[in-house]
Image (cartoon, rainbow, N blue to C red; front, side, top):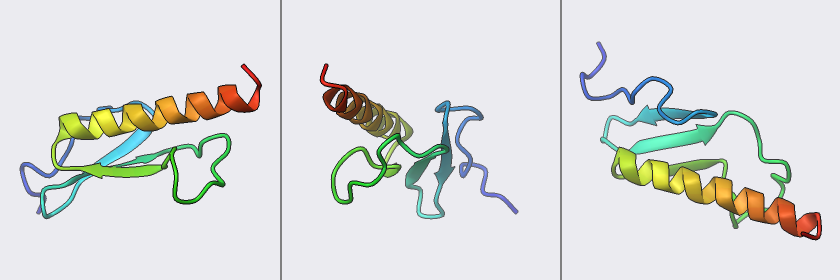
Length: 77
């Protein structure tokens, strides 16, 4: 039986899979790896977590921004 508050809104964050743990934390994992997903210990992170759904969306935005900045840096922009 699924807990009534365990599911995140469908298609809540496009390109990311969102779950809510039994402990009530939200987790999101990017469906596709970032272009340069080889740097361990620094953004962008493919999986993030947060206490609230709004905080999770902010974390995802930070990861997408970090990936964009890294891509621009590599391209010399």
